[in-house]
Image 1 (cartoon, rainbow, N blue to C red):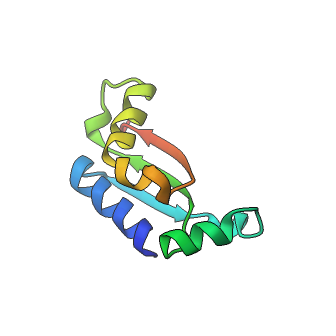
Image 2: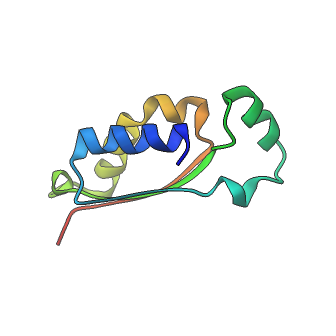
Amino acid sequence: MGVIADSIKEKLTQSFNPSQLDVIDESHKHAGHAGAAAHAAKHGSGESHFHVRIVSPKFKGMSRLARHRAVMDVLADEMNGKVHALRLEAVAPE
C-alpha cells in the first residue's frame, strides 16, 4: 500500500473502528489519463483513485448520505487534492 492509502486506512480505523475495511488503490486504471503524471509529480505519489469499503457499527441508524459525509469529513485532507476520485461503500453491519 502507498502513503495515501495508508493514511486513509489509518484515519478510518481510528475514527470508525470498522469490522471490515478495504482500501483499494485503483489508480493504475487511470494511469494513461490526462493529468495523471502531473498529479504524481505534484503529490509525490501516483495514488489518485481509490475504492473504499468500510463496515462499522458507528454507521448504525445513519442514512447513506450521513455515512458518506462522516467518512468524507475524516478524509478531508486527502480529498483536498491528493485524491482525485473515491468510490465509497460505507455500511453498518447486519
